[in-house]
Image (tube, rainbow, N blue to C red; front, side, top):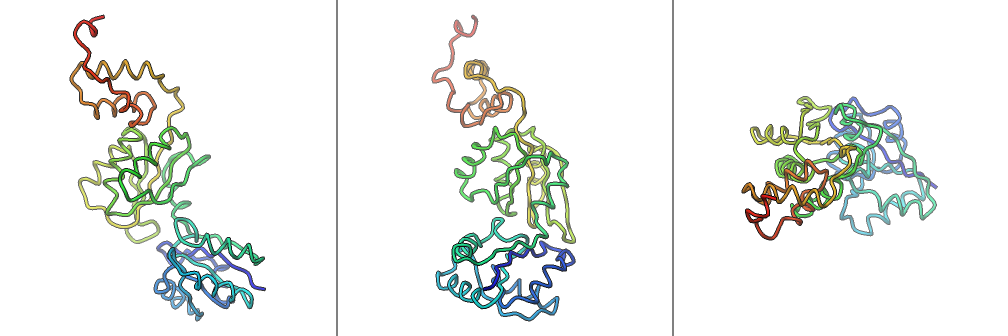
Amino acid sequence: MGTLYLIATPIGNLEDITLRALRVLRDCSLVAAEDTRITGRLLAHFDIKKPLVSHYEHSKPANLERILVALEGGDVSLVSEAGMPLFSDPGYELVRAALEHGFPVVSIPGPSALTAALPLSGLPMDRFLYLGFLPRKASERRRVLNEVAEVRATLVFFEAPHRLRATLADTVDSLGGDRRCAVCRELTKLHEETWRGTLSGALAEWQGREPRGEFTLIVEGASAAVSWDESKVREALFTLQAEGVGRSEAARRVARQAGWAKSDVYALWPAERPDSSATSR
């Protein structure tokens, strides 16, 4: 009976692979890879010759069966495109199947954008919530951000360059532009960069230049301050409405001050503009 090894591979710099990872890759009978082309180049760089089988998010059941059969006769290494397998990468179903069939599963730790970015951020690491890649659809993305708006733990998520600006705009709306954040780009690679500031500052930064590379975002958790109650939120909205401030802008301002999600404040918008007698009391 073989063992399924979950092997972390470099997220950029090939020197980050561990000696243990190289030994296990050399000794295993099969390598299951998210992208066989990328893994093939990695193995060739270290002069490792092993049969490769593709294992990705939409792999067919026959692919999983082939890996389980291989485990009956020897060890199998599972690697993702980069970093630690199963972190926003395929592999969960394979791990569950291996465990259900009685095969040992061993983790070979190593490079991960998650653990590389957190210490660079300058934000608390005692508690954090990993969100993976946020949904591609804007409405779903905002829903997730609204759900975590009051979470006190530091928030961590990945983003693709072509969605970075939209995601930053949504974080400003849902979490408030004053929250501290770190935008980590191209970690361990030649053009590695960590930008630190506020969410509104990050949005302005990447509105002014083209996002390029792989991004990991670290966002400060919700303030420990006590949130406003509903009556105080309604009072603030009445005041802003009387001043002629629009619904969306008013909701954004009050949400930031009250410690509420913007969508919840938005729903409390007064149905009618208060008259002069009401505002003078």
